[in-house]
Amino acid sequence: MDRDDQAIVRERSQVSLCTTVAEGDQPFIPYKGDANYHILRNGRPILDLTSQYGVAPFGNYSRAHRNMYDLLQEFGRGKYAASVDPDPGHRLEVLLKQRLLEFLPEGYEFILFELSGATANNVALTIAEHISPKRNQWGSFERAFHGRHQPAKDLTASNTGHKAPGYRPSLSTVYFPYPSSSKDIIRLLEFINANEERTFSIENLSAFMMEFIQGEGGMYVPRESVMHNFVEALQEKGVLVIADECQTFIRTGRRCAFEHYDVKPDMITISKIFSWCGFPMGAVIVRKGLIKEGTLPLGWHSGSQLGQPLPCLAGLVMLETAIKENLVEHAQKIGSLFIEKLQSALKDNPLVKEIRGKGLMIGIDIVNLEGKPDAGLLGSVVDACLEKGVYVGTAGNKKHETVVRLLPPLMITAHEIDFAVKQIQDAFDLFFEAYR
Ligand SMILES: Cc1ncc(COP(=O)(O)O)c(C=O)c1O
Image 1 (cartoon, rainbow, N blue to C red):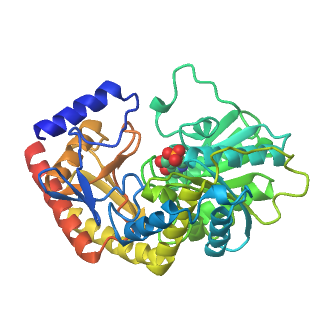
Image 2 (tube, helix red, strand yellow; image 1 turned 120 degrees about the vertical axis):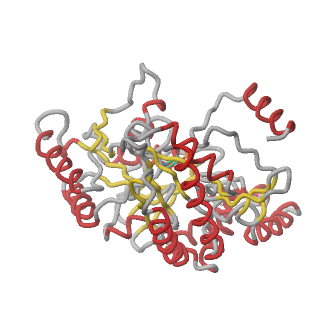
């Protein structure tokens, strides 16, 4: 780190309240972006395998950005300004909703825009309250991440640091075991049977929010039939199933991750992919027929910032790019290749417990020489990868799992994947030699 970068780190820590759990031990200060790379002040390119935790799905500066900036110029000349159209459901917002409904799996009819993933999740929970006012419990999975704003935060269970010691949830919340291994499936069944009379009853659950593939909690992929049966069982009992696709949308090689499980959730939330050009937005999407006339009273939800024209414009470019560039199929194909190559390159490294994932959502589960998760080790591995020119993220609650999280830009190329695998392998090998 040169002197200027050190000054940035110092200034940032003087004024920032927010901390992130993303990095290794070394602060990472990119200077500018170029395609799927961050460029350091000294000109060194670093391949970005985090997409800034999913909000830079088209890399750091791509042809999608150039299209967006052309449109912004038109915007600057007044072409899309909200003020020219007094209708609150202005043109860009309606257009984006129409396009999204065309793109999504069939069977969804309404969309509401919000400001982020957490607030989109909150609105989905509010809808559930209106639909089943007599039920007063929420469900989510152990290790789930649904955001840091209440009530979505009630359902977040990935890290105890998210909640203050005196934290009071707004509704009673039940965390179910996540069915990623046969052991977990048995736990899930035992949990459901043993809990029916005690801490919850399924009939009392208003909604169950789930990441079909867990991100922040450790990049877990559940068993297909179990997840399918679990969702159907919930819906049969009148529990509304909310698919939190904030991290997974497009990335797992399907439009929505729930499509891997052949189910139809009642609501879907998406967010990160909208934010790709710096105009954050979230969305709640509602299944056809879920909201009957009179369910939602006038004024049940609104916000003066919702569906603003710039984020809608960015959303339209995002969708157009995803469709034109075939990004769902690309994520599926190139993601499988990435996972296979990583599995082969790291198979003999004792620090690697498992490599798992779907599409371009991949986790490298690491352990120390005693086979235990080790947060210090995770930070050092992130730094070792950075030394080798690839920027990787982290996941897992650091106590029970320490996971390198890979969320590469959706347009990553086969050549970049070869480079990434080689550099990650070298970083792991070198680090292991020094560590053993
Ligand atoms: C699955 C999931 N849900 C919700 C959120 C929260 O989104 P936001 O940070 O936009 O509030 C995230 C963010 O990481 C996420 O990964």
